[in-house]
Image (cartoon, rainbow, N blue to C red; front, side, top):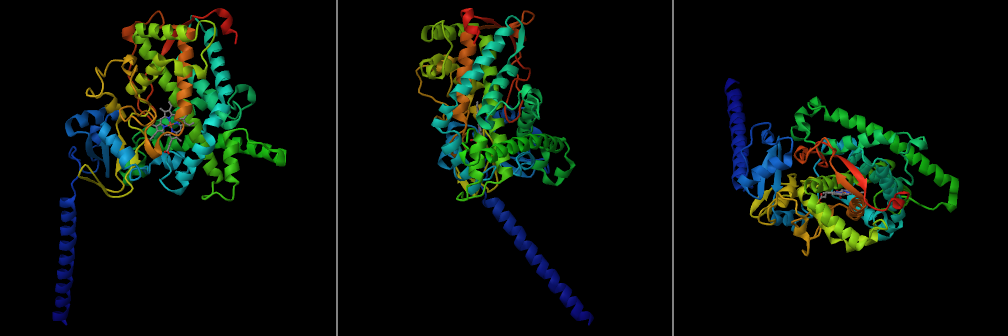
Amino acid sequence: METSTSTWAAYTLAWLATAAIFLLSNHFRRKKVLNLPPGPKPWPIIGNLNLIGSLPHRSLHQLSLTYGPLMQLRFGSFPVVVGSSVEMAKVFLKTMDVTFAGRPKTAAGKYTTYNYSDITWSPYGKYWRQARKMCLMELFSAKRLESYEYIRTEEMNSLLLELFKSSGKPVLLKDYLSTVSLNVISRMVLGKRYLDESENSVVLPEEFKKMLDELFLLNGVFNIGDSIPWIDFLDLQGYIKRMKIVSKKFDRFLEHVLDEHNERRRKHGNDFVSKDMVDVLLDLAADPSLEVKLERHGVKAFTQDLLAGGTESSAVTVEWAISELLNKPDLFEKATEELDRVIGQNRWVKEKDIPNLPYIDAIVKETMRMHPVAPMLVPRCAREDCKVNGYDIQKGTQVLVNVWTIGRDPELWDKPEEFRPERFIGKDIDVKGQDYELLPFGSGRRMCPGYSLGLKVIQSSLANLLHGYKWKLPSDMKLVDLNMEEIFGLSTPRKIPLVAVVEPRLPLHLYSL
Ligand code: HEM
């Protein structure tokens, strides 16, 4: 009996030893065979998170100077690959776009976008493809954008009037800009300003702007729990708590919007005509032929994406443009010389004038080169194991394309630290995802679907702000005091919002719009 027990024990031991050797050898063979891109050595548990500061695009830029344009790091337990050159951007966003068209799973996607039901965070697949088709055919078609031009003009006029009322006094520019963007997008998406105090709204405009700022920040931050999942429940930075709070506030607002839209639909019966983007989304949600059903939470998630995407980014870009120009007064002169020559002193700039204003266009491009709203785009994710430049990239690896680094590459740009719009004059470089040295909207399948709306709002607000007003810093501030630092989130605004003083520069009758 004793002999048979010890025989069994010996058998089991031998079996376990063989299994362990097999598993270990497999593990080492796999490790040896994988040829990962170069990168800093990761620490246990935290990986390379210790190397990432509060401005991650700058930290990764520094690392890329050591490890090259294709490097691999570990954020906690997850591999992250960073592309920092035109060639790498082309590989990730063009040549191998389908492979890298995924998005990583993040707490932000889960808690703030109805469990990845929006466009930005939804995984690559039928649902997302259908969403993009809706954007292309319905929401952002040239015809639809044109049909909303009158909204953009009315809102622009009210910005120009409001600024006139504050002439000579210090103004917080971003507040004015985000009001215009919010009103434009709100009227296009929701059918009315909604956030007017006079409209008895569920959320006041100031509160809504704070909600958007919070949403943008939380969608861009490095939440440690995303990288080290087993401590996720501790919510060490408190971000998840904040995500839940902000998404509850959005949900209350979006529920109200959908109820009102459905009520209007019921009231008009068969005579109902869709007039805004929520109507279009509700039409699609009711369409039985849709390949993937669009549920109520999907309509809410899309609506939130459109409101968020459309408000913050344009305001941030115009604020940076004016800040850079304040730093270089001679550029103001060049811009106003062009405006006076092309538009004249007796009218405001219209959207159709933009193609005739190459210097304004160059200022916008130069601002987007130096201050891309999303300096590393929105993270992508490898959908399968693959090879890039001979290196192995494993399925699930997060991919960042550092367009901030590309914008500072001295081999591409002469004196890249200088704000010089002239560099774009006579050059055939555009921002629409075809020229990989300038990708403020990304490129490829996941490129920003709202880019043409964003560009229209940015170009015409900047042109009119420069045409209609002289800009200076408040009298108690000198140029050297103008802090040009940024903060990181899903957008990258000025750390200290710009305060400036405006004086009208056109005949006064033009300001009674
Ligand atoms: C200055 C204006 C804007 C800038 C700089 C900007 C920038 C970007 C960038 C860099 C991306 C990620 C692209 C990628 O992953 O390759 C993106 C995605 C997106 N943007 Fe924009 N955007 C702007 C305006 C807008 C507007 C006006 C809207 C909608 C009203 C919008 C909606 C979106 C959406 C829904 C996505 C996610 C696309 C997807 O994952 O398929 N954006 N944007």
